[in-house]
Length: 355
Image (cartoon, rainbow, N blue to C red; front, top):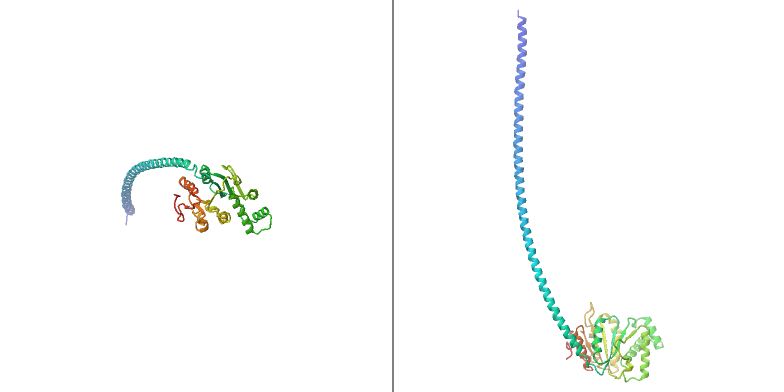
């Protein structure tokens, strides 16, 4: 018979062996897992260290590149500053040279102007002695040049009769103007007849002189006065000492002045006046002067006279009076009348200045 103690010991031994086996098996598994985890941690540390090393290397390279860029920027900045200094020196030197040239030019121009003014002051004396002259011009032309022409002529010892200004209303295509003119002449006239009557009376007034009868002079003066009252003309007597009817000499010279900006007046009034005076046998008694006009080529005024033989043989022309030399040339040209010439810079001129 089996002893109970044997059974108990056997059972205890079995359970003990089982417990020892479980303990040993559990300890072995845990060790492997721990080792594996430790290996993974070590690999992570190695990867982290490598990443840190790569990052540090990248940071070092970036810092080096930045330092190089900063050094290059400083170098470029120094070069730019040096370049700017050189440019400033060059600009200052150029400015000084330009200023010196300008001052020299201004001094030379001032000297030339003083010389020309002295000549312009001295030459006119006696040039037009024994003659009388009138200026005819449309309102709105360059008053500065007009004033300079008037002043140089006023010193010429001639009898200045003033300036007859053609007002904008002097337009034979304007119905109101035609009505006003018809009332002046006292009759029913066509537009062409009114134009002819107006031109004829103005021409008579311009060339009245000492040879016209007192009655004719009074009639013409009355017409001119009425034209002035209607705002069609204006007789400016600044620097003038007498009127046409007070002339002591019949030698009258008429100076027509215009520019390309007033071609309407030129074609409707001034050209017909020139033709009317010419047809009366008056030749070489005056001149036509063209002033420069902005945005318009020179020649629109004088070429109309130069290209028409009847007018070209009777009236001198000047296409440039902007300088002192040109105005002195104008004075000499007027003093040569009744010898006619065409002067200026255009190809249609005979010569630049009167000889």
